[in-house]
Image 1 (tube, rainbow, N blue to C red):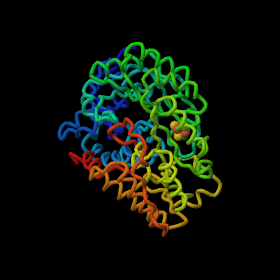
Image 2: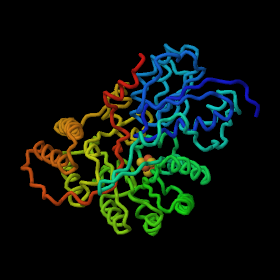
Image 3: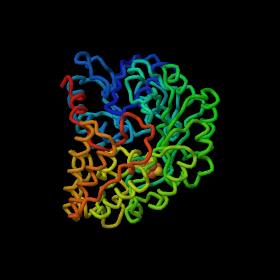
Image 4: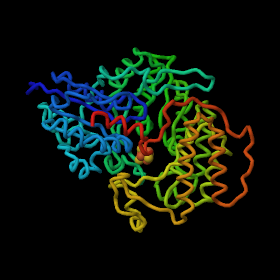
Length: 462
Ligand code: SF4
């Protein structure tokens, strides 16, 4: 197709979990070959230019996460003011649910996570191609800070590895009610062609990555595709390692694949356990039980793969006793060293369009939507639970600031939870924390509120 005009394009990523932003690099890979000048800014690593914003024809802000959206909301009025003639675009999973808010802040175009065709059309390329599969290309990572600036892998023995971040699929075939992907993908997922995944891995390995982190919402949505990618990966780079996110029910259903994942270099699996309480798991429609978590942990360990569960411990159905049970199960499974402490203080977020709103009677428990949290606030039926959650969150921030180890951080959570329930605080055995496992230096908490420092970076130049 002929290029219609040359545009000067600024793409901004407010936050992507310590990863070099795929959401910017993929767009650059699409638009640079069309002759456009594309500038990439990752606000997790730097700031917006103080001057020259008015020279851009199009500014795209990637909203792949709640935290990114919170930062963007504080940033958009300044972008609109300083770049009055630019087409202001927000794209990603969190853009459509917040359409009204974003448009009120001056955004011209709101696109979902399958934005590539329409964004290309906005820059004078092919038409919107509604209904046509999104074109995938090799991400163009030029202009982003090097991988050494991003999250690295910390090994239990004290070593570290440079990490590359790749995606082998998009979307998810499940409908977990609390998941932000569900209102947008509605149970669909799409494989990214293997040769593109490998080409993206190659450029990051050439830059020093010795470990790849697969960012797929669930790596085994398409197990055949995943294995083909891994076979090619392992054949090219037999020494390289990887990690992936795999749901509990997939670990159980595909237990026969775990030894192959290990053989191909899998060091650890992140898995969204969410809760051990079967009633809460039922409300979330997670497709697993509390007992399944025990089994998944055992299966992964038998295969020689570490497992890093994530949780949403504070939900409208959480009780003090239930929370203490959760901590007890984490301890008894030897998972204290495998769980980032913030995971034990997270509060359920109910965004616009959430499938949680479909639970009969649940909307009655919610307060009106508020832009302050980009969601529907809720309160526990037992106010002591909300008070505890706030205390735990402060404790975790303090523990992280002080650099406490995971057992010390857990001990604080343990004490506060028992005190809140008016119970004696049982002694934690010195050897209860379980094995140390490899972990990324940026903890995984995609639904947490942005920090003051993150918001401040976005506000530079305001
Ligand atoms: S399996 Fe994971 S990614 Fe898929 S819908 Fe459930 S929470 Fe979301």
